Image (cartoon, rainbow, N blue to C red; front, side):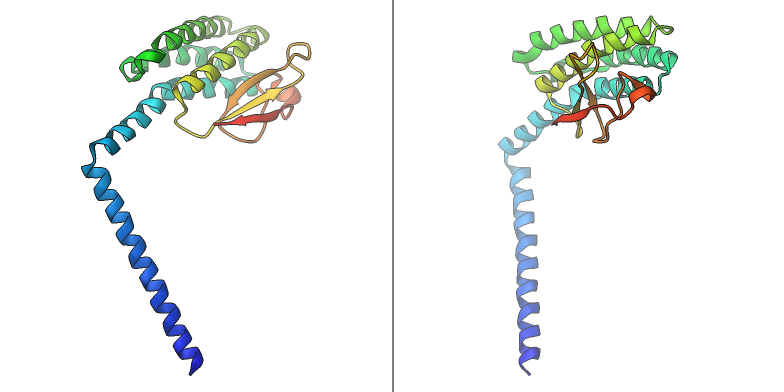
Length: 191
């Protein structure tokens, strides 16, 4: 008999909790719809992440082509990166960040152009990828990222000075050495 009453009591408590949680969720949703400040906050979050989306997609494709040691695919990815820069909605960039954004974009264009025009020189492409990775990291710091990303670092590249790259996966796949030393490096930061 005690077990019967205990079971019923537990079911009633669980039902009350579920109903209560559902009502709080509906209340929060209706407040968000009716509160202009809540809508503005969501819009600000969107502008923080959306502008860098096409750039990051192209950058990650370039990184993956370097991992595969495919200089021709790297060159094509460099061209895609240049096209992606043209797809960024400049009006979504907050005015106070526009000058920094333009400086970063100029550097990205220079490095992407070198990568795109040197299809037969993967070592040269990797040199510019190092600078490009720093620029993309600066862009993420400025505008945010539309997805989870990792800043990885290879300690051996550039005569032991090391270099970073941005990755969409936590697993290390080194674009500076490709198949030669695929897992050399470590995750240094997470976005």
